[in-house]
Image (tube, rainbow, N blue to C red):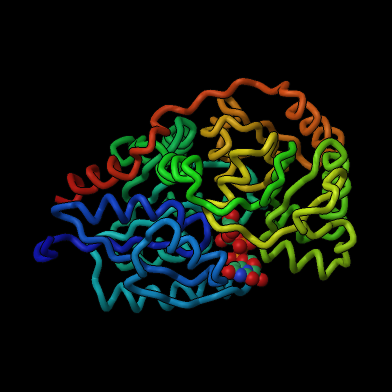
Length: 377
Ligand code: UD1
């Protein structure tokens, strides 16, 4: 399809969860008669298994613009994205900048665009943990305050934005693009299209992810959480694909002895098996077949709710309350008793029956694209 006369839309992705969200948006916008997607990868995440493997597995086109900013302190990383992104915006002059989620790249690119008077569309707007010690909460509040079009995933998002004074006409309840990707790929995993992350292991297990700075950056807190997870591991082995930030801290704090390497053969009882970060399909396979998922991630709370898999969130709050209100998620904080009790209950099959939230139907991205088509013309 010719691009002549189409409006240019920058689609920004920087970190692992962003890639999962932009995949269906890129696909839907590629079909648009009036919008031309231009993919910008900031380079916030750069390891093969944090970035390229997602592009490969989710068939995301090669980025049109690659900023290569890499890691740094919040200020250094945010500033580096801003400087590089401003150059790209000035050169390519997009008509709209679309950002997803709540990572540093999301805020950095919104801020640049708003100051250059280019409208910003924020996908996954309005989520609030009301916990300003989370860097993501700062990113959410600031991004929403300078966005022109706010696409929300759940009713709380709309309520929060209205309370903050956002005009109702700029808020659009469209569902959840992360679930678009999940719905499509759950089929692929069920059809056996992914490697089995646990080889021939077929027993009961818990899956774990942990990377929030509030959980893993302080040695005392991290050690307390590990003791809690060891209590859960007494119920069933825990498989833990670990984020690089977490792996660095395990080394720094000398906590290696609490983890075992999974060799596919050892007796699994009572252990936390640490693994490399998995690709999208392998991780989905791990989650789908787990008796319970223990996590401090945002997106995984949503994915488990859609899959109907029990989820215990190792945080005191959530910005995704629908997953607790009607989904399979509960909040356990870092309380050892609650974490092991959750694991025991899930293994007994004693868990609440969740429901899939409204509009988490696999079609959020086409809704976003058709709304943008009408907004931009
Ligand atoms: C970021 C997001 C977080 C999101 C998470 C998903 C912010 C503030 N946080 O956290 O909301 O849940 O991504 O993964 O944007 N590193 C590597 N290789 C990589 C990327 C990171 O080794 O490809 C290591 C580096 O040591 C880096 C650290 O991980 O300093 C943290 O990376 P960063 O992007 O700053 O934050 P995340 O913890 O990944």
